[in-house]
Length: 541
Image (cartoon, rainbow, N blue to C red; front, top):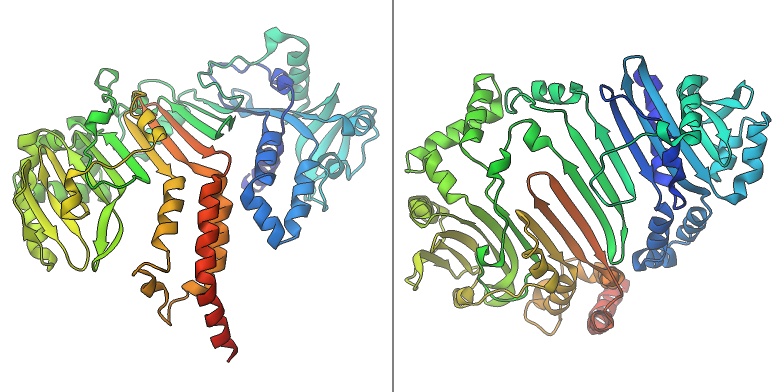
């Protein structure tokens, strides 16, 4: 069975990955599925946009300049003939079923007519896909204008042409139902989609998947209260690429009750220290309650080793006054911000910190734990009194570090003592995320990273001595590093948000390169060139 489905999966993946933009008509070839079936549906329309974004990007252009084969790859991608693709597969009372539809561009009109007339040949699958090399898939006549896609002598799917589409199915009945859906809109699949993306994957459970997941969790998840649902949407957006995931997983397994959904993170919820420009910011509401401790206990009783370890840690924390109730009061929110001011052996370097924030009296229960960390570290932490801080320990050598409690927040990080009063500067994209009602947010600012590296790698600064050590390979890799930084100039960063315990959104932000950044990198490269030439001359000798 596994040998039969592995090639079939390859066919499906090939369909998904290479489908390109066009009319969404292929979704009309998917017939309705019964509610008591287990099935998945996918449709893709924008691969042409993906391909254009890829081959027009600076990283691809740089790679093509270094390796000519990349230009050949670009030509193959540009000529790929699929315009759209949709599929549905799953289990019904009658067994496994598959429906699929592929729409090709006008260059394949004659070949599709040939197939429709029953004149298809063994190598026509490769010809349809413009493959530059023979694949393992061959075409074999089945009956009339229907064919079997073969691999290793085994029929994987049946194919037939209907108008400008190539239909796929596991049986003649699958093909007939697809034709029926094309002819009658009342017979087409209807999905309760909630995401706006044109390209999507949708999973419909009939109870089987949820029950199996609950059983495999060894008691960590509760019994399912409804059928599982998963929707994934993705595609190009005006400023990059977006992917969203929507699921009722948490509600199905009782991970959280709807009326206890976490409050959103706002700008006043962040613990802001250290100054500088934040190149990474992550913040989230605490997502645990007493129910989760009970779930861990139940899983441990059923023999789950990881749950047993968690219980042991909880028992050790109780000896320090950190009961489960106290932990819930401490872990109200948490975060990580990187980009603050720190120093290594007196040399300025980027810093950062992590924190947990909660009820003030509960957070102060962490003080004994902090004192243990300080005393057992073997490092020369100093206790410092500072307004607003209930406890503050500072390390100055070999690196600036802080550890302490301030107004209901426990903080640990690499920051200078003087920077603790300064707030980090968040970019406009990060600031906007704090206004959208998210219970979790993540922002990575590649522009700040480029500027930070350009400054950090300046050979005129003291830190350059580290890169000039004879045993260091920096000079050998520096040219590639600088070119790589320039190639990322159109990449602005990554954003990720989570809300209502059901929706996750991920954005890769792209845009026009910042010419000032590129110029700064080029000037940096020119500063290092004499050192690189000197190293090369030393090697020649």
